Length: 185
Image (spheres, rainbow, N blue to C red):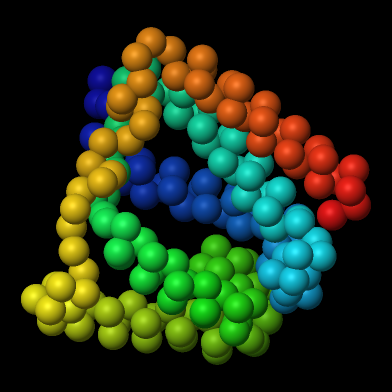
């Protein structure tokens, strides 16, 4: 029997299905609305943070279950602190100006929001195209570097069951979200 990760067509269909479910949940949680994202950026409403932390917990526990059984493979991409800082700053500027991140842009477009389509989708396409066309120049001039700090994931370094690490971390994140809820945020 062919393994799931060797079946590229199945991977694409599963990715599409999971993306649709995730987009639906983002929309239901209100994370595709400009006002909700703006309130998050102004530290007045932590709905978006709670949605993302919930996704982190589910993913972390899912990987903890599936990875040791060989049901999934992990492919961390190499990167560097410099790339992460520069990329994070660019992402943050775009996020603050438009009020959407890439995931919520797709949800906003699905809701029919014109700002998501014009500012978001067109911005992603143009930005990706500009970056791709300038990549070799940026690499030659050392604006982009590989120091490979993420060639191996934490899951690949863990000895024994990952649950001994991920369950306590999931409980801490859940406790944090409960505290935000009690604080009315």
